[in-house]
Length: 320
Ligand code: RI2
Image (cartoon, rainbow, N blue to C red):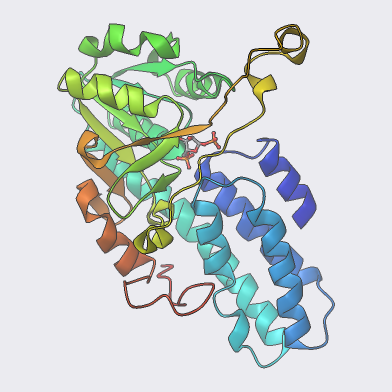
């Protein structure tokens, strides 16, 4: 898929979900590398960086996007010829896509072991990592039931209930504001993540923090399913995750909004759940308490506290 096409699909949310966005970005960079005509490696690098900027400008919150870009382009500056640079990008993109798919499968295995026979699980939004855990638990023969939220304003809950229904899992579909009313019927909350900061805070679909709050009040465990490339290296430097604010028309149609000149519609797409509200983050490298986020950033993204020496960060992301 070519770069502007992928960028538009990510912006309009035709391609969505932090993991899928990352894989689509890697694929677009790979296809772009194969198509670029540049005799010198410097010109090739410029072309690739231009493509990266187009992709990076699409959605600001899911850190899987910049991480995928950095991983795929990590060695761009070292190649001696264009062909070497091209081969490196293709190889890195393919490795990333493969390792991302493997990570989701691995998380499903680890996450399923936290689900007991007879459990009722609540999930919010549509996360392939979180759903992977639930579907794997069902596949293992555990009797489970799910509460899935609607997820205003984009209704990603509809994708979730279709997937669960197709997997043969009994599901209750509720509006977002009904979470507190049902939380006492729930044994475990499992959600995905768009970003995890160095202090273990989880940035995920708007409403997640309210779910976490209800879960804590009811003493229900809150589990986050997140691949290591959802962890945000630059939060080590104190950088904050930018919360995307999407058009108000997703919440209130323009024709109604026009009749209400004093009303401003606010539509943040994500919120932040503090580490204290999260019991466990399940990554493909194992389940960790959120307080261990720094270790994931250092060991698996290769960004230790002393290593911020290039704009793309150090090479050597562990793609196995
Ligand atoms: P996976 C989604 O964002 C949701 O917030 C979801 O929880 C998160 O990405 C992670 O999804 P959006 O693209 O990578 O719907 O686990 O705004 O699929």
